[in-house]
Amino acid sequence: MDPCVEHFVKYLRGEKNASEHTVSNYLMDIQQFIELTWGEEARPPYRWKEPDRLAVRKFLVFFQKLEMAPATTGRKLSALRSFYKFLVREEYVPLNPFSGLHLPKKGSYLPAVLSMNEVDQLLGAPHALAKSKPPKKLFDEYIPVRDTAILEVLYSTGMRIGELMNMAEDQIDILSGIVSVLGKGKKERLCPLGRPAEGALQNALAWRQDIWLSLGMKGDPKRVIFLNKNGGPLTARSVERMLKKYVAYCGLKPTISPHALRHSFATHLLDNGADLRSVQELLGHASLSTTQIYTHVSVEKLKRVYEEAHPRA
Image (cartoon, rainbow, N blue to C red; front, side, top):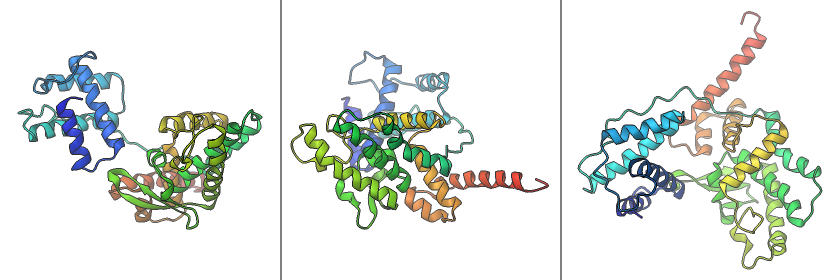
């Protein structure tokens, strides 16, 4: 690794207490800047003093041509700005070429939210789909059990997919119906488990030992919550692909992602009378303004109800 990048990663982990997910995103954005500036064949150490405002604008224009969402482009520019700010602080470079550069304006954004009926369809999809495909081996019987638990827990707790994939067994208290979640910035929060999620998770954990043995695995299976076909842990990408399969089966919008269950969790709580501060705590948002976007979704629903029901709407 480039010495400057390596030093920056140590800073993120040590001083900023950044999660591995955050560090990974920084490294991805820095790598893209390296490839656009010096080419894909370039090798460290890199000449960080060379990039000027022109190189920075080239980086911005590249993503704009790809029609990438302003929020994504903004995140990349913010990441590189932070990286160069660190390089200036440590006297690796004299100037930050990203300073003073305006981030692209974010458009009005309302998160994708499933209706209660759509959530019910999605949560029932693993077992419904499994009935149409007779199992050939034990792992085939485990798949709907595992996938139901994943979907139930995501919707019941509102946790991020990365938080679920990094969850250890000692974070789960089935008896109390509580999951301890390690969120962004390694901040811990407690998330209640609904009864369907409790049951689904308990069922998946009960299956785990038999599946572990059927795959010929050795050691302690408790290190993994949700097993893949090789006995290892599922990745976030695997869960995304799994969800797409059930979304297609239910005939829902193909753009639905695992994060839509988090959006739906928050919106349904607010629709049913939960206060904003409580939802903020459950989501693990540092700022109340981040949570307030879900009130806009609820207002949109109220407006539709008004327009459909009021005689002079």
